[in-house]
Image (cartoon, rainbow, N blue to C red; front, side, top):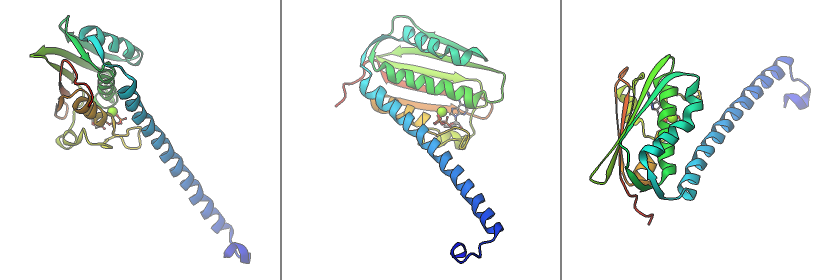
Length: 208
Ligand SMILES: Nc1ncnc2c1ncn2[C@@H]1O[C@H](COP(=O)(O)OP(=O)(O)OP(=O)(O)O)[C@@H](O)[C@H]1O
Ligand SMILES: [Mg+2]
């Protein structure tokens, strides 16, 4: 090689060092991404396995979730309203409901209200024939048709390289359909905000 034969030029070495630095950065970026992914997966695993199935009053629980999100909302002009009838008692996985709402709120802040000073989130919950209907709306930027179609796909994100892993909505989809035994739909259009409709039975089935 050039190194062994002593014919390596300064420019060769500089070029090599440039490539090495770039490679190092690439590796580091990917490690950070992997670390972020593992943490998201772990979070779900923890919630699913260690979180008890228990009785909750939905209105009270939604209030608790909102209180825990206050620090994230405090510095902003974003408003959150909850409209839930009192006395809806569920026997379910509160950890899943928590994770679902945190993912939705974080998405409103990061995507819906991106670059906007004002934003409004409306969460409503009702029960009909033992099925809970949880509706989540924001009045943010919304999604185009292509994004909306893929919103629950694993690793689909419009913020690749800006901290997005594209797992939030996929995790939500799995929690709703598998753990809670329900369904979820997303309606949106550019500049029309989003509306997620989550339906699940009042009492979660016991895992098989
Ligand atoms: N409230 C919203 N308003 C506008 N776009 C949204 C909203 N929620 C989700 N999206 C779009 O759906 C995509 C997928 O969301 P998802 O939560 O799965 O991934 P992410 O937020 O990009 O990354 P992360 O894994 O960190 O949650 C987002 O990248 C964004 O384009
Ligand atoms: Mg997200």
